[in-house]
Length: 253
Image (cartoon, rainbow, N blue to C red; front, side, top):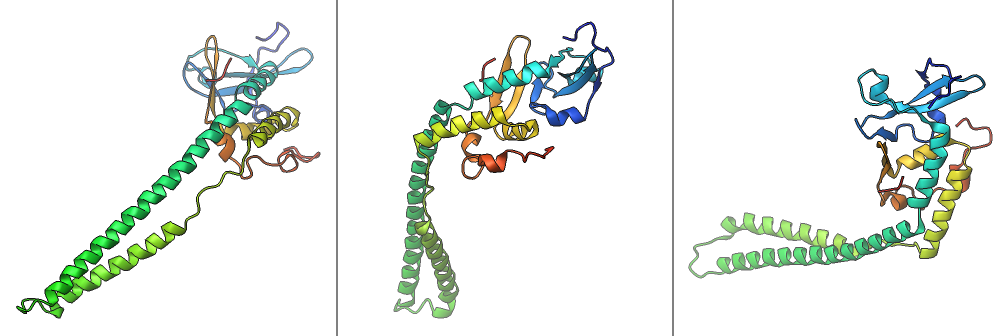
């Protein structure tokens, strides 16, 4: 809460959004609206607070005023210790390995289905040719030719599709458990040493769905699979991800 020397005239500060870690991510657990940034001038410094957007608009809800200078580093520590863990990344690796096995099974099933369709069309053609050879002369080439052409075109397309399916390469995982351990350490180190909160916030948005402020707890909702798929090469290099020197650039569920 604000101290007694803090200016009571609190207003939303647009520029502060670029320097707060959880703008656009932090949600009010009661009404679901985004928490907005407020700025208040104290006797010796300026304070920034997260407050419920509905409350700020005068539409009820609760007046929370969470000091971002205290909340941001604490929440970053929670995410690093509870979400960006080696254990979580290993679980994801197991899931990806399972997906690779599932892909191979689906490929086999698809190829088998195409082969069966081709054989069925060939059987139909065989019956048509038998009809042409019928000594009774009931059927003639002019009557059956359109059906033969249609079947042959279907066989051609199915063979092309089968050739493509058979040559498809399976997804490969060039990620080892050692990579995951190093990745976990690298992510935490980059986040905690970055001088650009905006970059950290954009990275958080790739896997964080929301951080909800409840009355007695904080709920972190995130997409585990995005930790390995959000960026090519698993994660940007330190050199590419961190800004240039002159750039202005509870518990988890």
